Length: 289
Image (cartoon, rainbow, N blue to C red):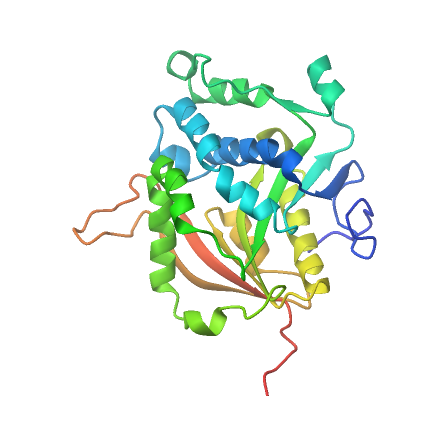
């Protein structure tokens, strides 16, 4: 059950959140793009139940390549005005120069990785230490009337080859008529793409609190539904079981430990993770005539 929504540190005074008092929800702008991208790539490549299992080697190079390749995906969503982040208002900066600018990312792809000598965990901590900013969790979204441009997504799919395959499997498994789901105007269908939280802030319920806040915010802005693909059990749970007044459904899913390609190979081996496409009806009480 969701906590009481008493935190008024949000972009909408009529929509408080359930986050702890030290946290604030803010709309993400271009100035947050590098921070959001870093959180997304770090969380996915070091702490996801899928990506580090698929790509255990050369994580540092992959995270830097992904950081550059995710530029279009992140900025397309930030420009929608429906991408939000959780900020720690009590964040303690690690470096004076970070505090002077309100936060800074210190990643440098020319720096040597310590992954080979000290392991993945040590390398993850090294890169996390260089993320010296108060943004701790993100939920990126874009309006369905302005979809992603596939050619501009190809660089990221090159860094994460299974990324495109996931969307292909879910798209071909979705039993719904695509034409019936296409929005005819803005503020009808919200598409969620990129949920991530820094590992040093896990367990604070920031992901779930931000997700539930966003559902309410989208509904207040007139959106009728939200679509999201989930590669983490906790994310599937939050979005498929929303608060009262909304209806969540797992439209289609597959298990990476079982799915086979045309040659009969388990394409995602050795990863074993449930991947879902979830649909949230924000206006379930409205029955079509």
